[in-house]
Each structure stands twice: as C-alpha cells, then as structure tokens.
Amino acid sequence: MQEYDIVIGLEVHAELSTKSKVFCSCKNEFGAIPNSNCCPVCIGLPGALPVLNKKAVELVIKAGLTIDSEINDLAVFERKNYFYPDLSKAYQISQLVRPICVGGELKLKNKIVRVNRIHLEEDAGKLIHSSGDAGTLIDYNRGGVPLMELVTEPDISSAEEAVEFLTKLRSLLVFAEVAECKMEQGGMRCDVNISVKPKGSNVLGNRTEMKNLNSFKSVYRAIEFESERQIELLEKGEKVVQETRKWDDDAGISYAMRKKETSQDYRYFPDPDLLAVRIKRDEVENIKRTLPLMPDELKKKYVSEFGLTDYDAEIITKEKFLINFFEETIKLHSNPKNVANWLITEILSKIKDEDQPNIKISPENLAKILNFIAEGKITRTVAKEIFAKVWEKDENIDALVKTMGGGISDDELENLILRIISSNPKAVEDFKASPTPEKQLKWFVGQVMKETRGKANAVKAEEKIKNILSK
Ligand code: ADP
Ligand code: MG
Ligand code: ZN
Image: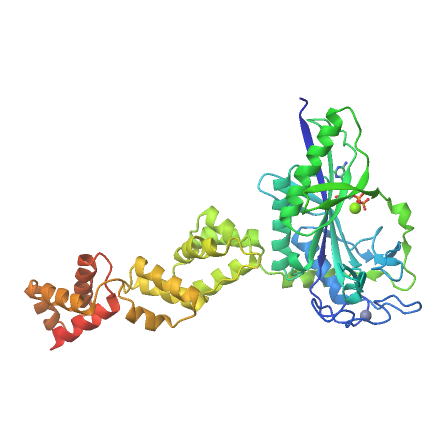
C-alpha cells in the first residue's frame, strides 16, 4: 500500500476572560439563567449599536504576544453574513483582512507549528435541542461573548501532535489569563481541517473540516477516523470531496454536512458601525510587561534553579493549577525537588483522570508533611498515611502526627525506650551532661526508629524519651 502524510490545520476558538461582552455591557458569564444576560445589541435588534470592549482587544494582543505574533497597527471589524437561529442579527462581527495578530508560532516537542493569525469576534447564542415537546430552545446569553480565533498553518501531522498543540495553547492562554479554556463549558472549541497526500508529496490534498470539537479526546478520535476515511477513498481511486463534516463523538464517525463555504459566500465587508482599532506600540509594550513567565520559561527555571528533572518540570509546567500549587508549596518547604516528587507521584496519580482536577490537600498541609519528614519526625510511610487521611478529609496535620504511631502501641514504645536507655548508659550520661541535649535526644529517637523500622511515631517517642531522661 502507498504510504500517506496526514496534514492538519486547526482553527481554535477560545472565549476571552472579560467581565462583559465584546460589543455591549452585558455580563460575560457561564451558567446564568437563559436569556438573562442580553440586551438589544447582543440579541441583534435592528439599529442597536455595538461599542467595542477594549479589554477584549487587549486579551487578543496578549494571546498574540505569547506566541510571538506580530500585532497589527490597525485592526478592522467585518461582518460575516450568514443566517442561523443562534445568530439573530444574521451576521457575526469578526475580522478577516486585518486581524489583531498576524503570524506567530508554537513550539512542540518535535516541531514548530506556524500560526497564521488570531482575530477577535463575537460568539453566537446556544441552541438547546430538547428531547421533549419543547423542541429547540435558544439561549442568547452566549451571544456577544468575546471569542478569539487562532488559525494555524497546515503544519500538524498527526492526532498526537494536534492534541499536543491544543494542550500547549490552552496552557499559554490560561497562564496569561487570556481565557479559562474550560472545554466542558465550550470555553475552548476547535475546528479540524484535514487532508492526506502521498508520503513526501508537496501538493496538498483536498481537505475536509470538522467543526466545534470540544474535547481533546474527540479531536484525537476525529482525526484518526477522518484520515483513515480519506486514505481509504484514495486507495479505491476515489476523490476526497472538500466539505464540512460533522463529527459524531458517540458513534465515532464523521459524516458529510454541507459543501465547504468560502469567504466569498459570507460577503464579508467592514462593519460601518465600528471604527477601525488603532493599536499603539506603547500599548503593546505595556501589555507585554504584564505577562507572567510562560510555562517554557518556568520549566527552564525549575530545571536550572531548583534541580528538577526535565521530565518533572515538563509535567508541572503543563498546567497552571499545578504550577500554582508547586509555587505555593515551595514557599513553605525549602526543597523543591521533594515538592515536585510528591506532586507528581502522590497527587497527580490521584487526579490524572479527573475532568476538573481538584487537589484535595492545601500547599500548607503538604509543606507541613514534607517538613516533618525533613526533620525526621515522621517516616515516609507514616507521611503517606497522613497524606491519605488529609486527602479524604481535611484534618489537622499537627494532631495527626501526634496520634499516628504507624503500628506500635504506647506500651511497646515505652518498653522499647526503657530498653534502649538501659543498654546505652554512655549516651544517657552525655544527655544529662549537655546543656542543650538536642543531638543526644535525636540519637535516641533515631534508635527507636531503627528498631521499629520506622513504624514508631517520632514525635511521641521524642516526648517520652525526654520525660524519662529528665526524671
Ligand atoms: P476557512 O476554513 O475559514 O476557509 P482558511 O482557508 O484560513 O479558513 O483555512 C482554515 C484551516 O485549514 C487553516 O488552519 C489551514 O491551515 C487549514 N488548511 C488549509 N488547507 C489545508 C489542507 N489542504 N489540508 C489540511 N488543512 C488545511
Ligand atoms: Mg474554517
Ligand atoms: Zn448585550
């Protein structure tokens, strides 16, 4: 069989983190009572005038800066005309000829994916197809929510790469506080353009487009399915028809929806209601200064300053919530490598399959546990037990450390201590002779831990030893 290259270009939409919508002052809020955040502008009543929300422009500029886009001096809003019930004014305000950002790139493990543009547009309302008598309902709350659309060049060559791209893009956007990208809320959605061609050929094949995929898993499966479908067609000597296809995630198949529309079909023209936006260089510089260290830079810092492995640093810097947790914890525990270890082995293993990962221990509590280990007060085994308890139910760690003996009774502990004391008269003498017998005390605790193979509670042992020796 002939071998094939898969060619993929993505169009990624993300809802921007503004307080209000892009052309009116209605709230930009997910989950409100349907049609409660609406006004004449965002439901598209004739004659209502849009007023641009500057914050939305700023966030798109920010997004562009994270991927080294060029920021246009002048950005123009255009009307993209089409009718659909979720778009009641029959045109979407978008940008075609002069988007806010041009070019840019995102580095993946094995390649650089070029970005064509990022523009600003408005989201449409949401159709809710009910199964009962209600038919189809419309919620216009989402209408007018600011959306950025990022379009890549067709540089992506596999389902894995597409997911890697999206994961990285999401982390940049979340990190720069451009968008929250909550995929389960439709906060980040992706159109997948895909074609195949004989391996090595430099002529692109006909592409199909699958719109509005809203999870990485469906992006992955849609690409696998669609590339195979196209290869099979070519193998049979048939042609791939350029069209828009629908991905049915439940059935795991895509099917033809409509002939692919071109930009001419939309009769784009500059929106006469909105002025072109002048973007000044010093504004761009100011926005640049507000950007935090991006994941790639943080990764470098974690490796060079904290001595984390590449692998650990990579995992932590993939997600903002992990970075935040890590940063908070290392303020309270001085060994970042320990924190990284626990974060990756203990915590991530518990949450890796969760859609909305929730770390059920606070940075303060993890730092406390790590500090107790570092001070030799608890063993790793006991630490893990304490960790598990706190994860189940937020308990007081200091109290837990006192009560958790890890398997030996008070009597056993007392007997053991007495035995150690009586067989080490020299150490007892040293203890009594020293004005600050901390070191000697530690030695005794060490003996207890050795004899019990780490099962004793070191805090309790220390107290008991002190009591007995001070009598
Ligand atoms: P539209 O889909 O609105 O017509 P574009 O022409 O800008 O928009 O292209 C959309 C996406 O399709 C881009 O991400 C681009 O990289 C990708 N693309 C273009 N040609 C191909 C192709 N032959 N195979 C795969 N992807 C392609
Ligand atoms: Mg498209
Ligand atoms: Zn409104």
